[in-house]
Image (cartoon, rainbow, N blue to C red; front, side, top):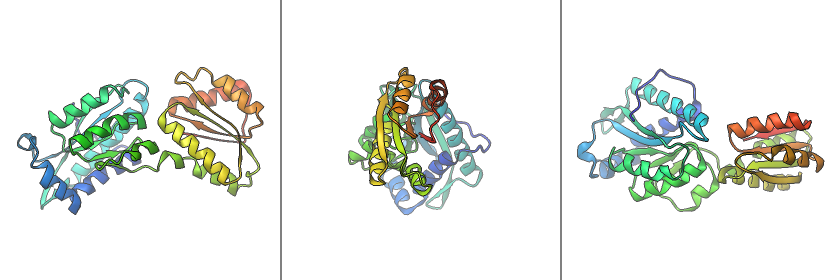
Length: 280
């Protein structure tokens, strides 16, 4: 499925992603990679003068909302770059084209789709999928086929523990996501508050919550409750009530958009009004 350019839409993060890819191509290192690896690959004869960026995105399944919004931003950014002269490589302007498929939020489907994107569609650069789990499933293909992959929606620390040479990120590590929230508590005289952490059971959320617990300890904030919830989040009312019973003043956690909405809804149902809430 190839993207058609659309009018510019607001999605700062995704715009930065495509701009970074464009800058990577235009820079000396990017030109070297493009000329010496991409242009000499088995796909070279099948490629056009455009720069093809391939990726999967979650248009259905668990991450359909986040995936849809990411795709809108990516398409907007590609359109903006093309409308402003494209990317210059060795003195020649090239447009960016997008080649993407719905991965259905499935880590099982991701590897076969990236294999197709690289070997059949001949994408020269890659964007990772949305989420840390799906990014982890795609990264080995970037290594296997020597394609630069930029991670825009996966920030779990575990992604960066495999020594990948072709995978790059623009996000802060998940383990630091809650640092600013904890800094706010300290700066606003809430160091004496007791903290509850309730997070989704996935690599990204676990890394963020572990990082939060460690950073809270460094700032001498007491964590009185720290638990994960299942994918269906059915236990949230009981777990939130337990966090409240443990004496927590503040709440950190969540995982993704739907999780956050459920937590806010259940806080009202259990009658708990934390002083401070920060959700992923």
